[in-house]
Image (cartoon, rainbow, N blue to C red; front, side, top):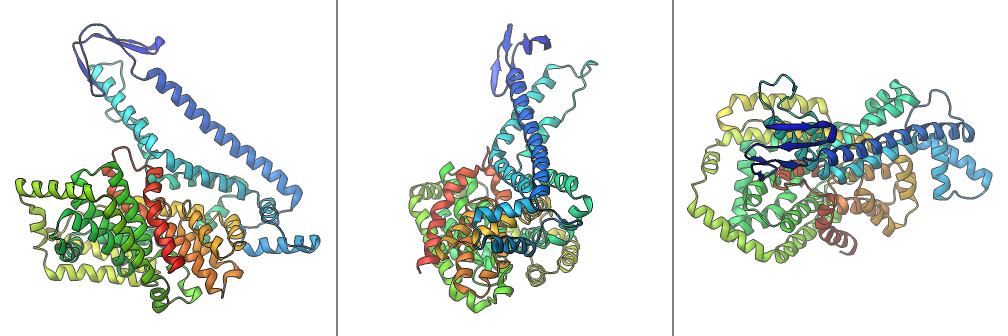
Length: 565
């Protein structure tokens, strides 16, 4: 029998026993505080903070709008965001009046006064960044809500007419969605759209996302992730990496070193999103099922992100930060290898060697565990089946990837190619895995939200970077990459006139952005692809601080290689 005392916000349960949140409740009257009071209080706190944020945005809009009208009149029909050329005209006028160069603070004040919405969209952007750090808390709250919902269902008879319970908990599902890293920046586009629409109109927001933002990279990542995760490509990559791992008798440590050193360099030829997809899937097969320690799990993820961030620098078309500026700065294949490629190879080798030494004891234990599982467990039928993929099927898949990479600047071309690829996969289904688009679409959604936010931040990023010397520019680009896509950093720098023709500053910008690409999941475009594949091995979700700590030593080594060698 259950007595639900709703007025007192607790429940008295007198059945024989229940399993609730992993604990057995024995017979007799027992007071179970099933988080109604705590959950209600936390929900009220969250709602109050959310309402405060909404109110703050609204007040900021009003305040900024009135301030902008008094300081610098906004011309009618102007589009948002304002181009850098218009800002520079206002700044040049003010410099002539003051008869001196503007300080950074004065420059930012001019830009905020000219377009007050800058302050609002930047506030929302940093709100999204803070949200990424809170994502694990949302996942834990989602699990608690799910357990509470299931317990309430178990306490009510199925035929009860007084309950309207449904099998799925909507609050738990919403909290889980709020805890998905890949969805966060897309979610925060909603208040951005509302703010711009309220101030400038819906047409201005549509013009911005249609003409001022490029979603080519986001769409390409969806296509290349789906292709790289196909069975023939994975079997082919596993055979290539396996031939290297056999030097170390194909042990777990040999596979770990091979995946984290060779696979990132493949990104120079098949693009970094494809390389990190293959590396993450192989780690999910060869390494993470052996249950490494939490420190080793984060160390491997941070090392993967850091190495992949620079692994595409042997060529000028694979790494997003390089691809976006290569044509404008006249960087070709020879320039990339002589300035970036060999240094990246040295840094990747040193990173992998360092982490192999730090976790050498655990690698030896994982070797023993893997050998015992291989000896006592059933034979790997999946690997045997993969060897049966015909050569011609693998060749066709490689051609699909090569054609897509060659046409990565043409979304219509690689999407049409992708549709033909799906038809080919269906026709050869007995040699294929089932195509899963969930992870690629989530990653594409993440990148689309990130570039939409990033395009609204050039008003403050560009003046910050253009005032830095070579060394500070390197560290500035690295630091800014931790909370913005490193490709966006190099792109914004390509718009600054002071950097055009100055190869020294251009190198410092690109080297810093590449070195910092592994520090956070948003620092480099391929990172969300790797996290979406490996996050199932982190029960509480991937902690941003844990990832930052794990990726910091490899980042220091890579930065030293680019600066000192």
